[in-house]
Length: 476
Ligand code: ADP
Ligand code: MG
Ligand code: ZN
Image (cartoon, rainbow, N blue to C red; front, side, top):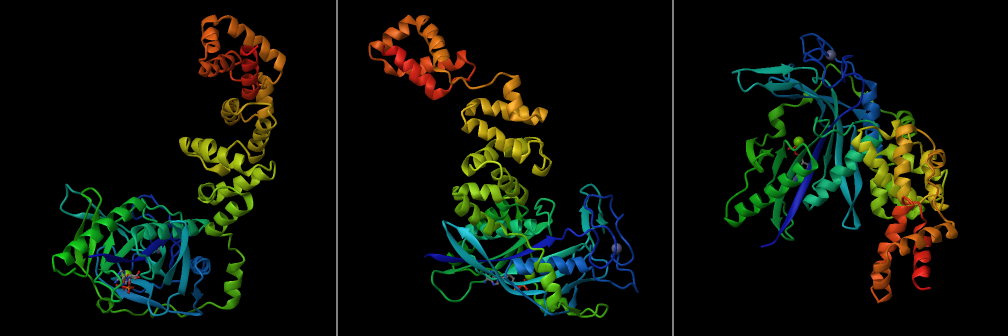
């Protein structure tokens, strides 16, 4: 039998605010345990939370970027459960009245596009972190993360393949990074995803029973966990068994999912309105103020690059991966109108150097103007593409402009036919055997002679001209 796959994703993003959601403690990652804490985020009795306005700004930003309706009236709620990383015994979140509703985002898959519904986006606080030491019979708890602001983004069950799920996650991650509200780091957990998945007989209108998957800290893990789970569901159904509704953990080492707990229902949490916070009213003035700060979004930028600059979609995707790289690309085009050449250089050499030296493009010492001027030298035939690679390295090493390097090192391309002819003659004279073979019909030796000439000129001979000169001499 054939099956339809149904996937809905819940994503938690840690917000890049300086301080926590309900107190003034720093949100910094990696500080010594329990140093960024105070009575509020430690859940001491009698303390009162005060909402960080920046969290609301960020939530509105994401709501607008995902075509959501921003709620005017917001109520915070308590979600009650016991766990050692939750000192208050409840998490402050939003329940019936989330900040954003009924949004969507467009993903690009298999050459087409698809709209994925976003059910809701709400604000909440993060819990602390347990650290388990295998040698001890107790665990540690670090409350630095307790009270760090999160947005939870819940999608509709609109994805029908693992590919679509990954595309959705990539798009969403890129958006939150463009908005500057989250660093998108999946390994460190600032962008985390829980995946709900079910299968049903092809075409059936009723959903199958779903499981919820946790603990996937990379796109690859999400993909693998979902694929594993799809086969598991199908196998159970084929054996006439039932899928249990439960939460399962992905074990990346073993490549399997394991039962974590049976699925909790919302009534298990005894949600009720948070009595310590007044309703939050978001008026149209506030929304307008935030709207003005929205940048061009990644998908728009991607499509605009492909269309306006006539570069392949693949290039547009690579160049818009990060906003700063996209800006660098466009800055280059102010100095030279050659989008494809600029794109090639950024995608290969520039991104390679940035990666090797793990530097940010905003800190890259080869400025857009320098790169553009170097490309101009190639286009004008002053240097060859091959020589340019060395010039690029030298620009990066010394910070000098391309034309200065070319001058200092005598790298000008040789375009003087007379000069090349002289050198070519000498080469042919010293290879009489090869010349004879060529004349006897082994014409592929042309490449050999050209190679010798390039070597002789240390790559500076204009390749086209080198070809022409040698051919001319051999056929004389
Ligand atoms: P909960 O409160 O238990 O987390 P929700 O109704 O909020 O449940 O749904 C959580 C996520 O599960 C949503 O992203 C939704 O799209 C997805 N989902 C709901 N039903 C299914 C299903 N049958 N198969 C796959 N995903 C589903
Ligand atoms: Mg949920
Ligand atoms: Zn605090």
